[in-house]
Image 1 (tube, rainbow, N blue to C red):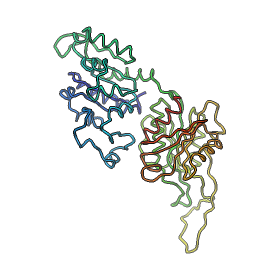
Image 2: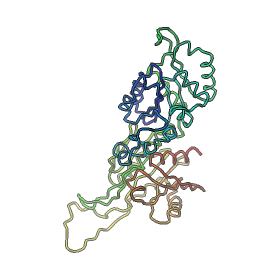
Image 3: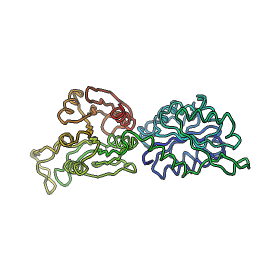
Image 4: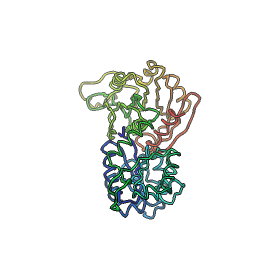
Length: 415
């Protein structure tokens, strides 16, 4: 349930803050991606470097960035992680960006002070600002001394938060930091993780339980044993669609050509080489609830593949081409009424007109159209600009491919 999910962990200033390090590891063991926001008080109990080392990400503490080292260059971001998934390019709006990034926001431990701030809409630090900005479900784990937990103000605040849709995990009883016995201990990390899994089932995305087949990357059509026809596709857009579909609850199967990207955990993947192999694998995965054909499939292949390397000649040579299987059209011709097919169209001219024509010809439900770009857009780029074409719908989107993929799928499935 947690594989590929985005968990934003808020840590506040209580003695139990040290347990949050174990909680990060527990989430990661389940395949979740974790980022951490701390209050300044929390950093008195555990260092931000601990969380940075565990997560591999910047740790958010200050709303207003004073350290110029947080201003990552695009080259730095690309060398560490793609800028599409690491939204550090504008640290001044991290409370917005990280709130959007999260599938679930967990605050553990959450002190009485932070509970009071959240209840009354205060946003005087990065954590409470992110709470206001986040559209993800929020789980609060109250942790404090027993008398503070039972205080009328705390009880009232927790009841208000519950009535507003916040999720609360009751603290445990036991020996507290004060030396007294009472209710206020942070539950063990495994217990918090189990509760989060139950929560995510209840908050299941629109693709929960649906079989999603995604194609990605280029294909190679060999001319001889050492030469082939292909294209510069990196598979980044296809992998972005895979991650977005997984985050929305889909059971994702990835059919990919030659790519060098890391495939997320929890994804069934099938490596292929040619258009024919990709076609056969897609047919083997039929039926499915959703087909997303993001692969840059070669439209033509050599009519004949030479068994040996073709030697260079002084005279001109000719290669006769034959069409490759049309995977998207086959899906359109064979899909059940409940099946959704989503194709991509990459064009150099008349983008919208050609996308509409392709949608009709291939019997696709949706076409995502983009120009062949250079540098900042299209092939091999982390960034893209597209038009989503549906039945009477034309919507433009642009941005890092991971964000773009999520926006596209939300637009399609959350109308």
